[in-house]
Figure 1: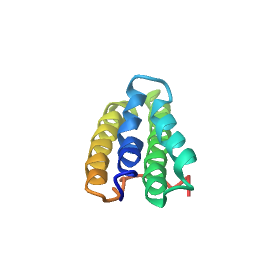
Figure 2 (figure 1 turned 180 degrees about the vertical axis):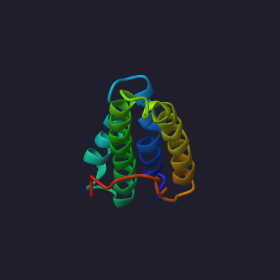
Figure 3 (figure 1 turned 45 degrees about the horizontal axis):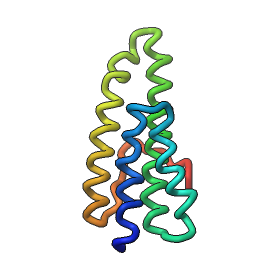
Length: 112
């Protein structure tokens, strides 16, 4: 990873925390980074795609948990999913800073 890629790679992961303050913020940052930099750097594209795929997966899991919350089964998941998201984003950012691609757990590949 070059020094020019580093801010974009780190931003693709840490930028998803915007979702805690702005609706859909967790998708916007990695999506914009991927769309704008995918032709310039494969490293940036890989990190942005991994981050975006994880955020889409987490959104799907949250929707399912919300539906299951109607019968009380999903309530614990609604509490745990944001914590898992935060921990994974922090771990991914730390790994990205070391120049490694973090393998997000529970991530479904939507964007290839």
